[in-house]
Image 1 (cartoon, rainbow, N blue to C red):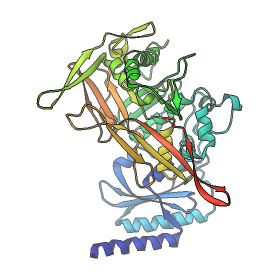
Image 2: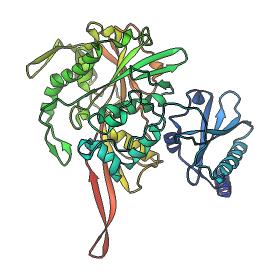
Image 3: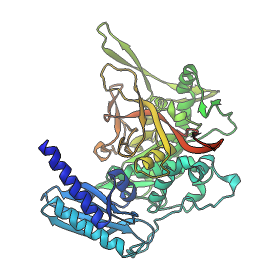
Image 4: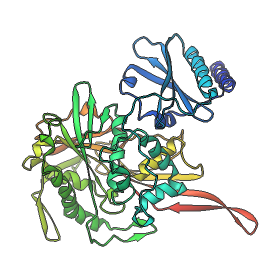
Length: 494
């Protein structure tokens, strides 16, 4: 009881002090949504963030941290620069107590807020900063998913977090916005997802000119990454949908996983492997690991079921599961020679193709979709408040005798659920790679290796294989002079 009272008194004192200085507490997720794009990787190596604050209008932000070596405390205050990016405007270190650092931060935030300044110029020109939503096309050319995120309230969390991110993004090609708003929406969204994931992993992220899409660094280690997507086949009839959900039988999916999907993955990866000027011959890329990062957008919601076709194609094997007389799981490997679909045939085993030794690994996620951005924005408290967002799917079962994933259901709410950008990402390592990737550079994801004819993996505690997110917009509709609760359900994108 005494401890509870002490904590209560401490919380009350902090609340009173916040009111005195016009400061509010914000969640770590909200703070990260603002500053992840400008936070330097060493920050989290040398200190741990403890508390996050903002002025009432969130024009200035602040964080209190503790140093890993000296165990003293510090604060950083941030304001928006000329391009709308939160950057450091005040910092002070070497406080002996958390309370002293907190009080000094509150002073700094009050001073910055009361200045009336909307921006805090930092000087220095750079290429960062893109407005995704300023229209560059007529209505007829806009991608349907772009129209949703740009206009529909149910997708306002995604729009908000994308806008924050794009204050920092470098458009190397000069056509990013044009493609994002039209036929290149999926490919460009996948690049943005990779950008967010790589920053979250604590890596320095740059956009090489002209290629590949990303180079990441940590210490003396450098890795190049090229993004690639599996796209719709021209002229192919779209799948049947019921209430916005694609309907396929398990038998149909099993057949597609054997033939069509490996060929779709193979076509996308093979085109990158056989680029006219191979990536690994570029001066900056030579002698460094090269990763192809692939996602499936070939039809609506195909990422819900297509992922297992990728490892079959990469390694040229499938796995068969059975139980022995004691109920123990037995796994056997079955070699795949080729994949066939509608008269087309390709050899299986991408990592065993000529020149594939120059590709160190393949990254894949089924969750790098618009729904991911919507959930991350929602967890940061962005967007309209009257959204009920529910995610359901399948995640890895760590029971050594489990052959199938487990179902999950989560209601996405700020402060009640958590999610990372890395969640659901897998790296498939090439057994023949000239320059293997150090898995420690990517600690937040699943890693897979091909050893002795079997795929061996390290899997995070929560690793979703597929998911779908349903957004319900709760509205008040006036009918017969009475207020009734109404709902508007947007179709799932993921």
